[in-house]
Every structure is written in structure tokens, then in C-alpha cells.
Image 1 (cartoon, helix red, strand yellow):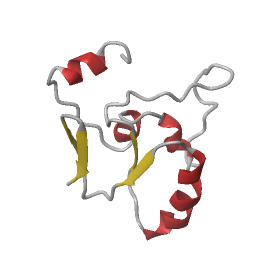
Image 2: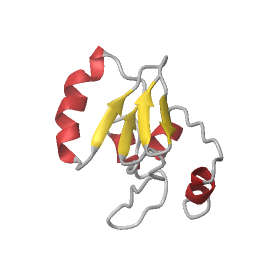
Image 3: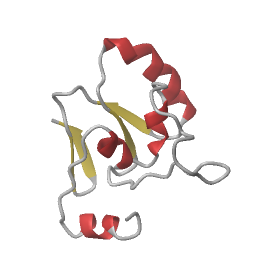
Length: 104
């Protein structure tokens, strides 16, 4: 999937990701582990684990289901990665058009 889908998206195919699907659209799926809700041992993984995402968001990771409850966690964790993290509430989306993205 990771080798097939990005070229399709670049050619104009629309991708809609909700919750984990929005995380997978970014450069790293490791964001999914920030809340401590997901067990990384549920599925087999490489050692070290490879959390490479699809990077459809042009170098921006998505933190979905954001509320004030997660503010300090996001502020702390975003310093551990080398790219921007965009927080989205359940009523927002991240739209990528060309080389730019924006919250809508």
C-alpha cells in the first residue's frame, strides 16, 4: 500500500483518513502511540519498529481527536520529532492542495 498509494495521491486521487487514517497519512505513524491507548506489540513489527507513514501531508503529522486534555502531552511530544504536528479536533480536517496544507 505504501508503495502504491502515494503516487496515486500525487496524480489527483483523493485520500480521506479519519482517526488512525489521518495519522497514517503523515510522515510517522508513531503519533498513534502518544496517548498510550494503542499497544505496539499487537502486530508484528521490525526491530526497531518502523513507524513510517505515507507522508501525504507534505511533512506534517496529524494528532487527531485533540482537546485541551491533550495540550501538555502534544507540547511535550512534538519536541521529539523533526517536523510539524498539526492538532485536529473531531470537527476539523487537514486539506492538502498541491504543496500546501491547511486546517479546515
